[in-house]
Image 1: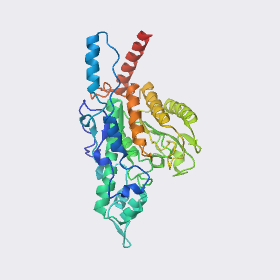
Image 2: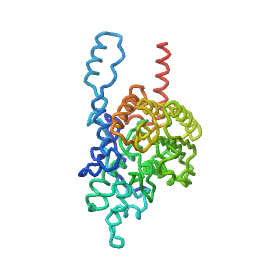
Image 3: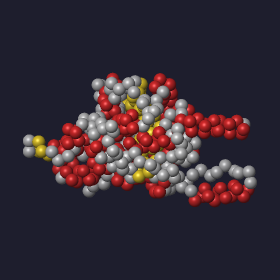
Image 4: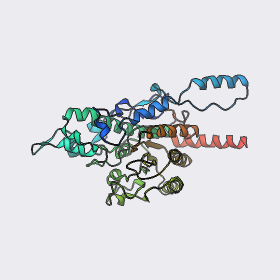
Length: 389
């Protein structure tokens, strides 16, 4: 019997299935600046989206209707605070669905041979050495609570994706964390948790596909699903960088290893080919898309050379494939170590909307079966296009 959780709750139909909380952002005496990761990028994504207006409407049959539509559009932003789903922090009971109690205890105040073991573990995971010397209550409040809230956001977005056809957690994507070990700024296994929650709690969800397009290998979820044939993993990453986890690679069903400096043309061709191949092979009930932006040219850790336009196009390719196969999709934002990545993520979300791949009509709680809803909407779109030809 699954435990009682606050993460699966009714969301108002007026909300977009975009999950975020101001608690995502990590700010503490400037220590977050000691890591190349932009620990405030999630809030910047939301602020950029709040400043984006929707595309103007198509001309209507009458000038009056077109004028009214245009006036309404001028006032309409893509999102506002009351249209965002507020993420909730994952509790210890939520985390224990995947994590061992021993691992979670390591993140707490635990004395070992006169040293505070929690300090060492969290400092190692976040790759910020001064965390070693911080009191536990500060580490919990300023470092781990934001990561637990993002983890809760991913779990919530999983359910939203099934209900609405798509969902985006503006944070999350901690793909280096497994049930008993963290690393690479990943303290909680949010991808594994989202899938396990769906398997346990949502009828009809028994197969999942992870499409991991972060520049780094997703060794955390790979270790968690090593022998689980319900989960198909596709991973595209720079073969020469962290973590180089040979054992975890055994769990990858579709492995695409890239060389230093891979550019747009080669990258996008491989993504398109292998996403289609993965979905044809796996036929999942949900896609978890790890959309790291550390593939961006100039990223200090990713080692690839993808342009901002290439990242936007990559996300479009994945969402278009999900739409064409009528599969709900959950996107998490994962890595990205340049200040400009926040704007690129926002631009990509806006492009998905402009391309009709995410929309508010689909994102309603009244969509009892998102696959059927997608099929109906796709048919209507096809008929509309035919009539315009």
